[in-house]
Image (cartoon, rainbow, N blue to C red; front, side, top):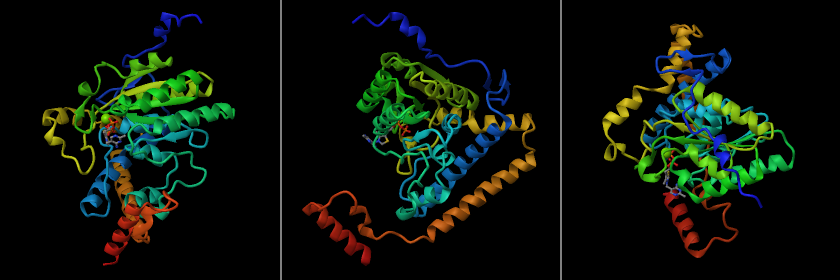
Length: 361
Ligand SMILES: Cc1ncc(C[n+]2csc(CCOP(=O)(O)OP(=O)(O)O)c2C)c(N)n1
Ligand SMILES: [Mg+2]
């Protein structure tokens, strides 16, 4: 077999994209890659994501939510990529911090809150919604996504699969195996790596000696592109290109969105233990939603009054949903022991009995 030509490296653009992009002051250079309706949809989803973060953290403090991982700081990366998909056609495979993408793809708010508030009977993904569940096991969603994309190809269905993972996940074996398979089988997969600079407390430079995660794409024989993950337009443009390539039989793409996890890893984490406040302040000053908000005002897409009204409506809707979910029946305590084993092992059976007894007190 002849050797892979070295020029293949030329196919890989691992630099941060330039061109028609949205700057920190809210001005776009070049033509906007999104329509007016798409910008407004993105802005609404970004505001809703912020409101969900606030509400879920409050509910966790009230012991009504078990654990929550906020999106804060990553809204443009998550929303900009998800908006490149057609939910009726394409599949979305999340990691565990892509809440607005899951909602945009068709997960109803009630089901979303039911999952976090332990009303598991109501938390499922409705039939027909092309979405996989949140994945807590780091990188374990990637083999599923590569397989799903391969299935689309085998079935000759014209659909793209978008899978998310973090910078930390990109150091797992599952990442390598999945991207390698996706490259070899030339499947319609878009891998969005949300590089938020941390895997819990481990900063990027301790996770990898590489300068760029996008440059890994060359090893899998696919295009790799790094974008400013706080720039809605840059993320959308790169994702839209990648989805089109997937649909047109051009195979997989790796997109690295460079952003910052402004919030804590999750509600059980204290990031002040491992990072400096100046770093967080700098990220806060480059908030991705503020960029879009400035653009929306400058382009007169919404008046200041309509913007305030929208924020009030979003919060009121979430509050109503969370109240309705709180009224749903709780599952019995032994629910968590079902659907794994046919016959429970002795120790697990003992735990089940203790849990049920504890719950009846
Ligand atoms: C297989 C596995 N190993 C370890 C963990 C514990 N863990 C939870 S989140 C996390 C870090 C993930 O970092 P990253 O992939 O960058 O995603 P982020 O949390 O920053 O969104 C780890 C190690 C886990 N959930 N699964
Ligand atoms: Mg991370």
